[in-house]
Image 1 (tube, one colour):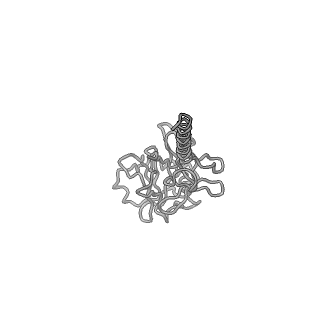
Image 2: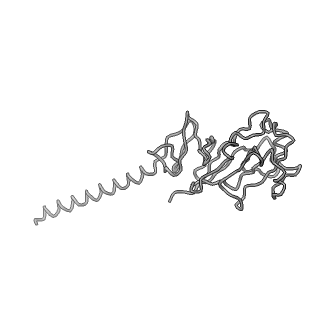
Image 3: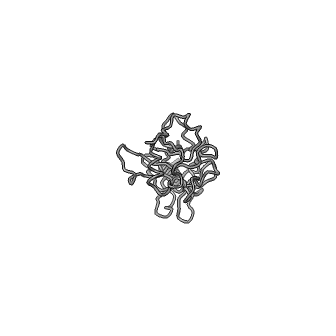
Length: 218
């Protein structure tokens, strides 16, 4: 083999290595593409609104410019904020129709996540269970006259239909299931949730929502 032939072969090999590296890099980057905005909300990786972006295990839905999460019970919850740096998002709690004390997701059993879902309920949620049966008094929840749920019933229009019912509140901590907030006929029929209540917070400053966190993809 002449020197010029060897040099040409070496150059060809180098070019092929460069092309291979670029293809690998492009594949890697494309596999981490963020999805387009949904309305005014950015959809960061790994959240996925379709098969062409994000990670399909982190599926959310964009319908009419409204970003939503689908529960295991088949109920859609509006996503109101996302913090990708802390792997957290907040969904709206279910509506309680006026003059009733039934959450709009009652027929779905409340909020539930699949056991293999990458999402779970964070420990910063204060959950208020409303219109409960007396069986709940056997639980360690705060069902006293000073429970935060009393403020919700008495001072918030959405809770006015539950006024006078038995209610309780609790902080969703790590000892509880992180995949469900349960409501049912014969138990508690309505609930709401507030994220990150701090001592002394006024009811006007409550941040209503259910905060979820997700495990980053492998």
